[in-house]
Image (cartoon, rainbow, N blue to C red):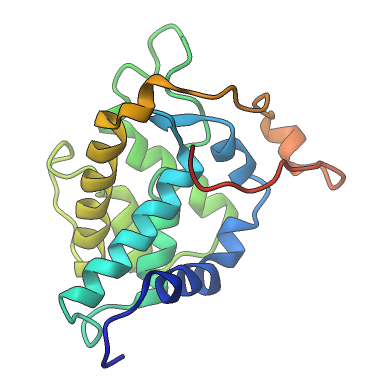
Length: 187
């Protein structure tokens, strides 16, 4: 990878290395929950993956980064599979501190993860979680997440939320005949 990657090349890399995750039935839950502003958790995860690859590319880190692990960790970093905005008698009160662990637990149920992916998912909320990532991929996911979340939270679009499809239950998302709405990446 001598020349810098274009946006289309980055999107193709994310699609190639993330297809198993992007196509999984549980991602339907992410498509139906807002994460920051008017951006769904699914769209946020795609943005984090693309930005993490972009940063690795611009910093010329290809000789040090496992791109497949980077993309998979970025796509799964918020795989907590609930809407943290919904009232739940306070169990999501500490969401910012605990959702990395919840995402890892869910990801381990659905996918085979290597050490880089596990560490990056669990520690992506550093410094809110006290232990920093062990691998460079984890730092890239962490930084891409902070940049994306900040941009999404302070976007003027946050005032123009569209109604999302009804949130499927985990059981409904796993049913073989379950129909997903069209995939969109953003607003």
